[in-house]
Every structure is written in C-alpha cells, then in structure tokens.
Length: 382
Image (cartoon, rainbow, N blue to C red; front, side):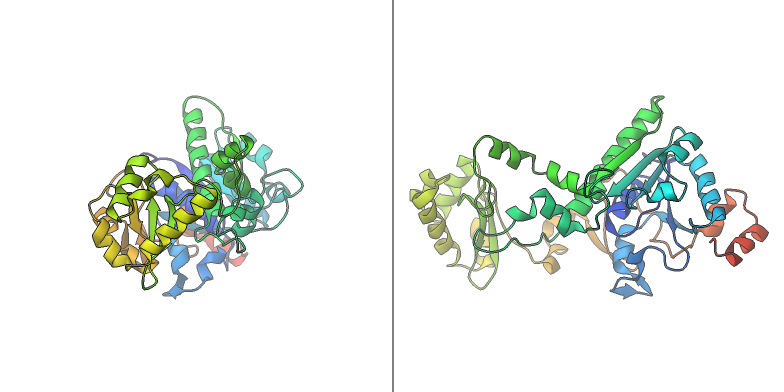
C-alpha cells in the first residue's frame, strides 16, 4: 500500500487526531496509538457502547495498534523515545507546552530523529493570545466566522451537523501536511514540526467568502452567495415535512428547472435580489410545498436541474448511489464507513484495538523481554 513501511505514533485523543491517523492507517501506515494506562482515549468510553467499547472510537481507529505508556514516568518517556528512533511521524494533540514539559518537545525529538515529522494539532495554534485556551469544534468555527454564516438571517446561527473544524482543520489538513512533509524527507530533506490549528483550518475554508467581502459584496447569515441569497441555490420544504435541495447555479440548469415546474417567468430572476428576489423565493417555496419529497423525486428524475432530496441520516446507507459505492456497511462494533478514496480494495486490515491490545507486541519490537514487560506493568508504566 502507498504508506507501507511508514510508522506513525499517535498520541492524540478524541476526534481530530484519530481521523487524521486513520487516513494514514487506511493507506498502509503502521499507526501505533499511544494511550494512558487504565483509561486510554476518552472516546473509548463514550456511549453508545458495543461489547464494552464505544462505536464512536471504533469508527475512527481501525487499522491501528494500541500501546499503553505512562509518559509521566521516566521509563515511559524512555520507551517512547526508543519508538521515536524508528518512527516517521508523531502526531500529538496536547495544549502548547505540554510536550516540552514532558521532555518530549520538538527540539528533543528532532535531535533524536532528524527525519521525524512531528504534527501538533491544537484548537488555536502554538502562539497567539488564545493558544492555551480550551475549546471544541463549535468554538473554533465560531471564532473562524463560519458558524455565524450558518442558518437563516432571522434566527441564531445553527451548529454544524459535522465537526468541520475537527475533521477538516484537525483531520484532513494535517494528513495532507504530513504527506507533504514525508515527501520532503524521502527526497533527502529533514523532518519538520507542523503547527496545525483547527481554527486556522476553518478560516481557510472561508477563502471565497472573505474574497467576496473584500470586493464589497455583503456576506451575512442567510444572505450570501451560497447561503440563501438566491432562489436557485437553497433548500425548500416539501409537502409532508421533507425537503429538497436546489443547486441550479448555471443558467442552463435553472432554465430547465423553471420549465419543469411550470414557472418559465422565473428564468430571468435567477440571481434577483431585493423585492424581485423575495418574490422569486416565495414563488419557489409555493411550488415545492405543493408536492411531497417523493413526488418531487419522481418529477425531477432524469432532468439536468441539480436538485436532490434532503435525506435523513437513516436513509443514507440505502440510497442507490451510496449503496452502489459500498460506502457504508455493518462492521465489528458498529457501522463502518470505508475510506472516501480507495487506494486498494484490501484497505481494512484490523479492527479498532482494545486498550493496550498490542503493548507486548510493540515493546517486543524494542527488545523488551517478558521479564522487563512484567516489571513495567507492576510499575504502572504500561
């Protein structure tokens, strides 16, 4: 597989780092999840549980091995440093300064292994007035301005259903940065320290909105280019409570839609604002509320109009397109979503690990014999 032979040490907890390292593991990297003895990743014990382990943890930690290490002990730190000697990547999600206080900061690790790529994932980054501030996804997207754009203009912002800053800023973007850094190392360069801020990631996803604002175009909740300003790009309620998404941005799609719904007079009002825009919105609302979601699905099937029903989560797995792609299946310990981009069909190598399931196996690779392992267990190091 593309990352076969790459060793990743994952010291993170919860969602962002786990998503990042799962992407690497799915591409063949040997990801060693380093956890505290006793409790481990907090997500392990977050309901709902299947056979004593969280389905949320299982969804993010396939293809990894678990090692428990007490990094507050000298012996635990020594073992981690020995793992660093053989590693290509280390991912951690502590607040700024924690790794330094443990004696495991970038200067120490870089001196130990000059080819190591270290990735630090935090809410606000390694510097700035909020660097050490606690937070979660809703706080990061709020600070980035993304949350403030979500929802209708006459109501408070609506929390995003997916953790955009966690998964995008703290999962996808560091994975891309790690891969880029690994390419540099494999071309003969040294490793580097990657400062990943989930807030920075969320801000970067607002590039188009910020550009529009700088050009003098208003960008406000319920009134921006792709946030409800235009009747050709929004969600409409259907009869019976379902909803339909309309994304007819190009004139050819909007023209065909207006023709299909019997409203040719709306063709020239695609990007209308002000009073004309309000009338267009109301006209489209009246059209869609007259039929159920299923009726609209039949009426618009096969047409080039960029319209699709808004699915409830329980309907996604059975949708013909999702099912044909094999994206969602029942796996050990819960539902499993396969990698969005397949490198090979045999991407799944192991289930999410039990806490410390591979401690003996991994430490044996460091020449820790059974007697020493027993001693480490008695001391609470593993």
